[in-house]
Image (tube, rainbow, N blue to C red):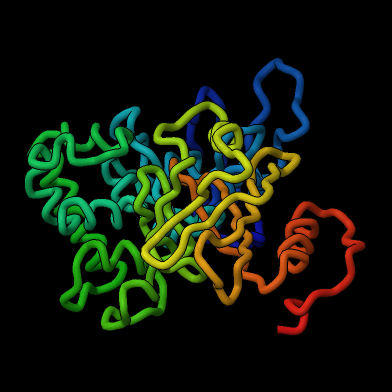
Length: 330
């Protein structure tokens, strides 16, 4: 939480026809409108209310970081510019942690996108050197628009990214991808890449895996290939008991059961291995939707079906009455 009264500078700005006072600690005060009824959030200093869906702090559904950036960095250069949180903490709205970036730069600063660019193009630098060269190379159409940016915009973004990398954390001989993965993280560049990434790119478009629990790139045959208004619901409708949920060079997982969370933001998939005599034949996966991709996480493998059924039940917030299994002691 921000100490609202601990600040050095205070400025005023107009944002969306509202007058705000803004402090350099990220706190804002929305002024009441002349000759109008005073609203509950008027004339009070606040660091904002957390929107749990987006992770951003807001005042009356207006994002605090855009107000602060307008007050201390001026109006956005274009309507397409967005605010980048330099330390990647969405709740750190101090002016020195915010900067206006283009749509292209904002996408490039996403570790998932950077990883996809490296897989398709070799490196972020190679993509920016000639974006048109990679037109139609991306299976996910959400990335195709980037191939149409001008050479001038690509070069400007490249220069800005290198400048930010130098100021935020020296590259030390690494690539822009290294810096994007590790912005403000205390991880050395000589560590294996998989240990530095939060996500592993899957073998299916529109899908990634949590690196900590699911390192082997896998294919997800039932994962939607395009985005929709309700992506998790779309994925849920593709699922069927007995069908292949995932497969890689080591194993194939067949769906035993599946369920969607009450808020429709998460899927849990219980599977059985399709291989002969596996040591742990059962597994449990969790799927969420973040940054326009489906994120797959492994919640464990199990010796017995009762072991995976227990975790499948508990994940739904339900009471388990089926007793213990060998998995509880392993």
